Length: 576
Image 1: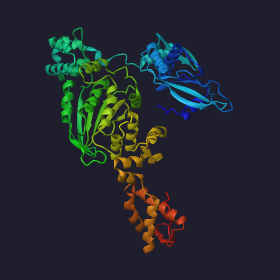
Image 2: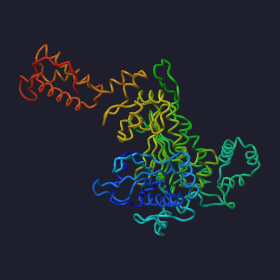
Image 3: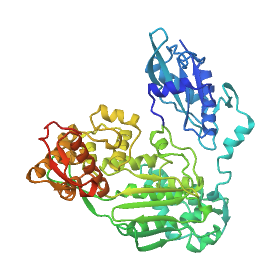
């Protein structure tokens, strides 16, 4: 999602016209809740069709561009000034839309009018309609033709609905041969069902009185005496796979070494409700140490959290695109677990999942997924994804990595089994008020990824990071508070003056060739510059700078024949 700043608003104000996903309203004093709900329906549907994560309704801005400034003028709005009124707006929109659209509180920016007075501007973020599910307002689907609000055209409505899988592969009834079911798998399913409803003994008691057929009909794995594909995937014997079409649904586990070279493997076939437990038993769970700031006794924690492992694996089983005939693959490395399954990541992005106020409303295999929910194997879609991030954060471990690109479509989730950066651990331990979004940003920094500059503002405001560009790092204040001063100094990088002083001390003994200077500085620079080529480039630029300042001069031949001599004492002033 875009960072909502003055620059972002100005970018919208500069657009030559409103679009299907962008609407400006003056709304100087008030705005109709009913009309607002219609715009929410239209902007949500159009944002989906334009493959955007959201549409925007901006209040307090005139739609006519000022030819002098090139911006739409700010008029200001008095709408929704209190949280009580904001909540009434949200309740009204959720009540009028289907599926219910839960708006966030609007972003509030204060900009300057043409006369210099302040103007209050509201930016309402309207989430895109779920894939395959157009958003209606009081039973009517709204859309936009350019800047105009109106009924959603039939072709757009068809396009939205076509995004949904018209046929749930897992819900198809394929046999009435109950002998294809595993008695052991059904017993395990009953245990899981009893665990889910442990707080409701009447439901558990009723389940114990049911026959196997009645139990499977309760789970909707059986319909009118017939067994669905979902029933065979979860509870079927291995020979039942012939009724599923294509290759056998299978979970494969492989072990690789630190070079990612194959070591060994094992396949786990139907029934998958038993395969899940058998596979998890193969994963090596060991204790690792996490050292709290300024403590001498480490915390001993397992390298992988059982709930996180199961959630990732259950998601693979529930959301695998079985029509592609591939297998679910779990790859265990020395410090990571990778979970791979075929199929598009339906929410579109992990960022959307983490900030969502409500879960994704569709499953790829609805029949299979709903049964897994009943068996306490997974939560409703995407709440578990957010839970995985929270669990890893609570353990001070790196957050999960998602790769959702590929052809055919697939999802890969990597879970880390060790800490990567002690400063990240320290920041989480000492700043327990960090939001999940802020923890995600810190996680990106520790993994060497550069978040958008605008998203770092909150971390800077809390004194968590400093530096610019590719040198964003944990701040000195955090390093001192967490006892990682040495790590901070090492990460911050070299102070050029220190290295210039070292060169001067060397040349004070006698003129030296470049090789001798490299011998002096390369080991020192290796602490923070990994590439030997980059270290030598740094030394070359350092010597050039010293020569320009008149501190040293070349008394030998150019380039490789250079012989550097001290020309004048260096200033003690630090330069970088």
